[in-house]
Amino acid sequence: MEKIYKPIVPKWVGEILERERNQDMFASHGRTKKWDEWKRRYSRKLKYARLNGWITDRY
Image (cartoon, rainbow, N blue to C red; front, side, top):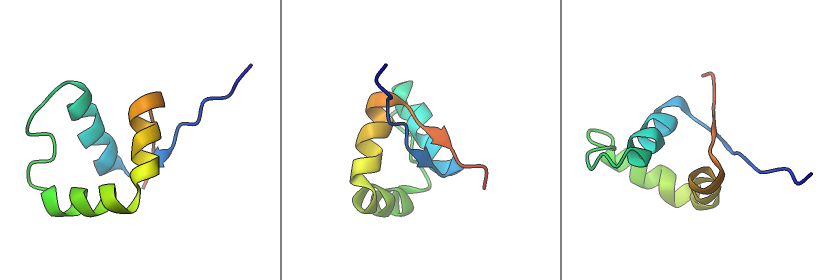
């Protein structure tokens, strides 16, 4: 059986991804600068989180 990679993301990123999944156009409202920086730094992690789901970090 093939294992699917599910990246571990911070809680606030998981919240934004969940809102994006529900097609909320204001998903990153109030965190835009922080979100843009995270997307740029972790673009590959973001790609796989959107494809395969994600695991939320406890901290």
